[in-house]
Image (cartoon, rainbow over all chains, first blue to last red; front, side):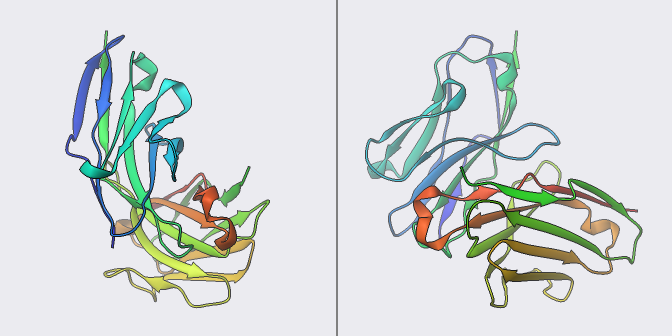
Length: 114
Length: 117
């Protein structure tokens, strides 16, 4: 079974600063990797996903993530954080098989200060 | 794109009553449906996986007699919380896949916030 580790429970960054959220996964086959964002009381919004091909993936809201198979990582980055980026971020791993569920990490809460 | 409609978005019910949550795939065939639960300030935890026309497979620790899942058609899956109690208060969210189009990923509903009083 697959698993996801997000080592950082809470990160605080200044507005305009760069951001990197870490994600490590464990899965024996080719992973499908996702980053979601969730604002308080809201549902999930997909930021980006990786299935295959170019290991640097561009997403919405200026986010990008890089798949590094050798490190089993899929870290999320943003060059300049906005106050509206404050939210909970979840990394998730799935697979091509239709019956394979998405497994989520515990999430990283991002706070943005002025 | 693929859309999953989940209803209701919020529900408050009395302890001991049952609540049904619906997830409908609007523009694709949801051959597989996943149901998740999210407690406050926690991550999403998989409750069960269901395939159209088959019985659901529940994760360890999830009571199948309490959380009834029906996936009788390719466009509709329901989760019924039976004899709900305050500890069942949570955010429930469904996710659907079409087995022949897995590269389209996982499509999530908007979630249902259940409060049991």
